[in-house]
Image 1 (cartoon, rainbow, N blue to C red):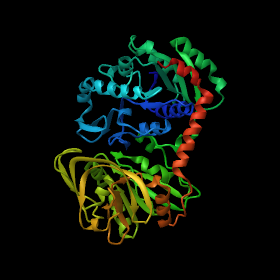
Image 2 (image 1 turned 180 degrees about the vertical axis):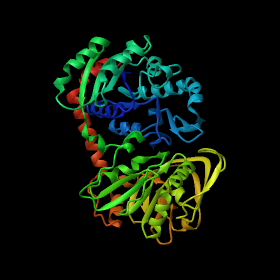
Image 3 (image 1 turned 45 degrees about the horizontal axis):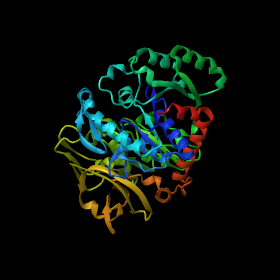
Image 4 (image 1 turned 60 degrees about the horizontal axis):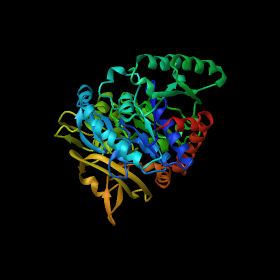
Length: 487
């Protein structure tokens, strides 16, 4: 069945966003479209309908294609941890961990699973849209490659190369890719797209001609910067590096420590979109703003490592003082574990075996265990508001504060208590991700903070943004030409 792969001249050139846009654009034409990324590296993950996990970007692309996410859309997911390297997830399930050098020798053994997943998607689609990883020109990693040209050649999949003009040097980066890649890979590249252009596009007509002249590849589109990208979940933690923009309309401040192994940080997006909220991202060495109304501790891929970073930077003192002054604190997943009296990892599941005292703001203790819970959940929180979200965690948390549950989950017709709340009700912890994407739940939190009702309908905003992105690409890229290149 027809397939088309989009690779980049480098990381963060906009591959994930363009693939999402093309998924929606071709789905709008009535095609059965499936997104596919052979290998992804990200701690921003999503639970799939078939009970596994994939990169958050592929879940968004599935949504753009109007299909349920599947483990086969991202058969190899690498989740960076601490000294032990990265957790390796194959077709939705954890199979082990490996450091970067060791993983290179494992890749060849993963190619059959990658091709099996690709074949499954092909069997159910009219068009499979494939996203590469990192840069097509990383020829030092070409041996046993499964993410870019190695996959493209194994699957005989035509490739479109994406360059990012916003970072500068795009002519050299595209032409340079042609220069360094394996001569046997080069015929697979059928054309190029230049992304993130700002200004008068006529000023780059000559640039497009020069690239075509030097590469022999077809110029398939010059895509202007798409401002609506800010309304969609980001693929990786690079998005967290952007400086915090203060809002003149904001009435309340939520402070979020960004720790080295932060995960599932798309939990922030719905809050960040609310005009009444200033969402302040802090590094561990920075001070907590005095105007903070809520401290939000995110998930972590290495809880003990992030707890150590929080203490080393001194921010834990500010959080404890904030709580003693009557301030509110919410911990999500790994953040929930950090709020407890102690975190134990006796088997070294997330780093060297060990244990450490937590912040002691919740009377609970967490012990990390090999079983990983991956499950979509619905329920009602302590704020008497419904939610839908998901659990993605290892570890069991117990202690007196569990008697005051954060939520009740609807499971098998019963209500199951989940999470913990302090005696004064101001410190809360939960394993549920995706809380704030639910408009009713987000409204309850804004009301608790006296910030007024939710201003946006978050899920509707995501849908509208995907449609706008599809229209944006249809205006600047020849979609019929792309279809003709797919085979």
